[in-house]
Image (cartoon, rainbow, N blue to C red; front, side, top):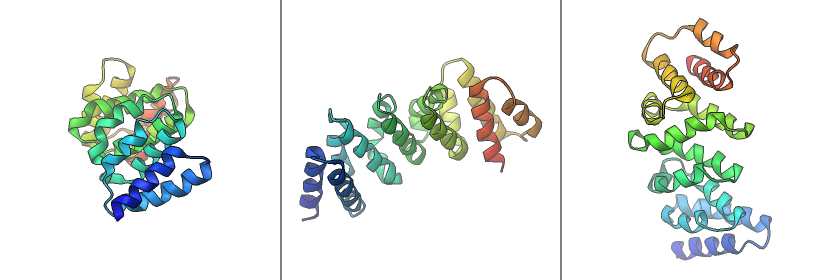
Amino acid sequence: MQTQTGDELMERILAHPSDDIVGTAANDLLAELYAGYPVENLGRLLHSDDEVVVRTGTWLLSELGELAAPMMGEVPALLSSPIRNVRYFAIEVVLSNADDQHGSAIARVMSMSTEYDTAVRWKVLEFLSEASTDQLQAGASSLEAGPVKESAEWLVRQDDEEPDPRDVLARLEGSDPTARLFAAAAAARLS
């Protein structure tokens, strides 16, 4: 019975005659997912050609916290999506589920610190502020040499060593927007 209800909700979202129906069905499907409906079934939404459906599937993943772990294989594609909301919600999935095996996904999130979209950069700042030191280390080690890697390694050192508030302040006041974002994350972590 539970699976049938979850399947029916999936079909309603996939058919979505209106955004009102998608919102209601998505909330009901979230309850079904918490009640045991298989999270892997969200792959049908994530692989849709419909922007609303993909956005809804990614939102559902972001709301599941650690229950979304079986879907981490889908996250790299979501982080590269042209759809702003999909990238935004995918960052939350990485924060909740990534470990040292997911260094490339964490590195992708860190690289998004240079993205043009301010909402996505804000979510990257939240990620950098809340990520564990192990997550930051995994991401930093997977980055290619360059300004983002330098900033990521600097942020990791803020957790590993005694942070220097003057260095954080100097980076916050600097002209490099990427360094400022990582410095803002360091300031948040210090507080």
